[in-house]
Length: 190
Length: 104
Image 1 (cartoon, rainbow over the protein chains, first blue to last red):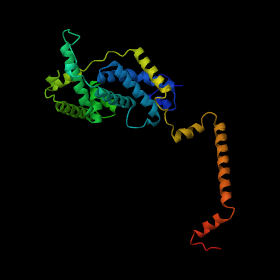
Image 2 (image 1 turned 180 degrees about the vertical axis):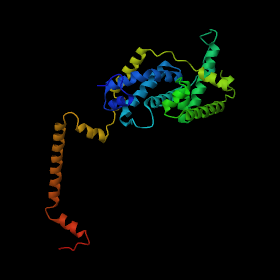
Image 3 (image 1 turned 45 degrees about the vertical axis):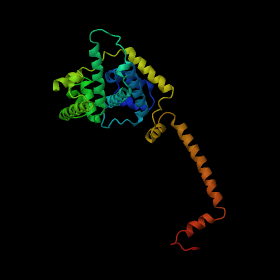
Image 4 (image 1 turned 90 degrees about the vertical axis):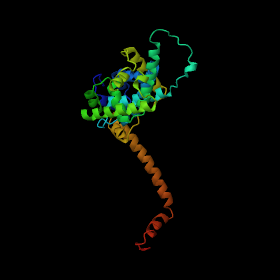
């Protein structure tokens, strides 16, 4: 009988056998973090829920291939799956041309700031998608997962210097990707 | 530049605390989609199959396997017999080996 305190690897072994109760425990444990991540990337509650559901369906399908002695920890693998799916989904959203947008409904102060914030959000997410997988995951854990560098190192199974190096290279690459998108000064989107 | 970058990353939309009922709805949705056949069942490896033989009801499974082996064996044996009625099978095996003199 699977308990709520069972280890992730034991849960995955049970899920591979088709154990729904184990799958439920696994989802309850990780869903809040994954929904938060997906919502930060997609900027939408509905999209976030869809992305996380699809990611869990992938877990159900691939559970038999999960190796407890493999290089990845389950939370890191889940984070990576959801992050990539959320970036893909965000990229599929085509912004409407400005001239078709009409007059803004919300004329409250701060409306322009909100628009700029959305533009900033889109540029960062798209640029993040251009980074190598390891840099993208490290940056995402650090900024979106609100982890400290030592916490990110633990989650990634790397040393602290290795994660710090990934973060430095990731930030440099992200700035370059933003520049490629025509954002030469961060003030352009702030 | 560095401070601006940090501000940019930290200014991405914050996420409010995820409500438990939202999580439960999401989980229900996952199971619903599984029941609709949107995700194939986890694939079972040969190791899982062999392990299942020692699981519940092994005598029944062993009996089923033994019966299947008998049926297959009988069918296979019948086929060999049917090709061997003229003795050509044995003869061709020997003649195919050039180091074995024919008729020895």
